[in-house]
Amino acid sequence: MTPDGKPATPFSTKNRETNQDLKPGEDYFQISYEEDILNWLEECRKQASNYPLVRETIVQYINLIRNLTQQNPSNKMSEEIVNAVLRDNNKEYFEAFCAIRNAEQGIKAMILADLTKKLTAVGAKLGLECNFEFFDIYGAKEQGCYFSTEAMRSRNLNIAYQNRENQFRDWTFGFCQIKLEDQSLQNPMDLDRLRSVYENVIDKVQSFPPWWLACSNAFYPYWNDETFSDIHYGTFVDEFATLLEKHVRVAKESGLA
Image 1 (tube, rainbow, N blue to C red):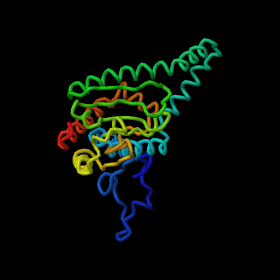
Image 2 (image 1 turned 45 degrees about the vertical axis):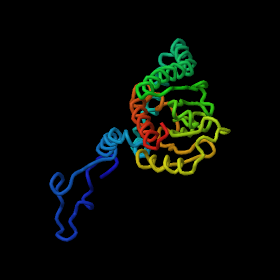
Image 3 (image 1 turned 60 degrees about the horizontal axis):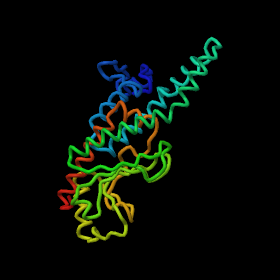
Image 4 (image 1 turned 90 degrees about the horizontal axis):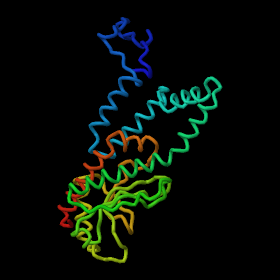
């Protein structure tokens, strides 16, 4: 296995015991990181859509391989854009580039507005009331989406997906309190049951007192341009729906929904 699939050297294909050369395609097979391993990981990523922590780990490995094998599409695209903008010494190309650059925040605002509609439909299908706070396209902390039933609200509980840091960072998905002064879910047995069911159904449980009672930060924890692309063109909404459905299951099995 090599980065680019180049043929093995005679030294590495020599059988040390018999002093015979190993035959490619018979005694060994040539595979590469840039094609074989990358394609395999891409398929693994699709299969891991129901396991956020595994999926994020695979995505990080994919990005590492792309960088090591010089397959970063962003770098190539940036070079092509630079050449196109400055081509023919045409001022109109540069002005067009500036117009597109200035539209970035508007594009992100539209993507978030569309996401709100899609996630509202997802929540409604699961019988959840939805509340959204995508109020800042620059990623101010503590914005996101919140889902609950009447029974959950009576226990001061909702299912939330919220960024705990600025610039769309540290997104957390799980169960959090609605109001800190409300002590409706302070019974240690209720909390233990919630966290136990959470680990059985979803993932290793985390908590960030006083707000977050049972949660994970494995689902798109740090947003970037690729995240906005996944939201609009990719599988973000489908993966979100699957994870939200699991949270509803946890709430029901914990006796809180």
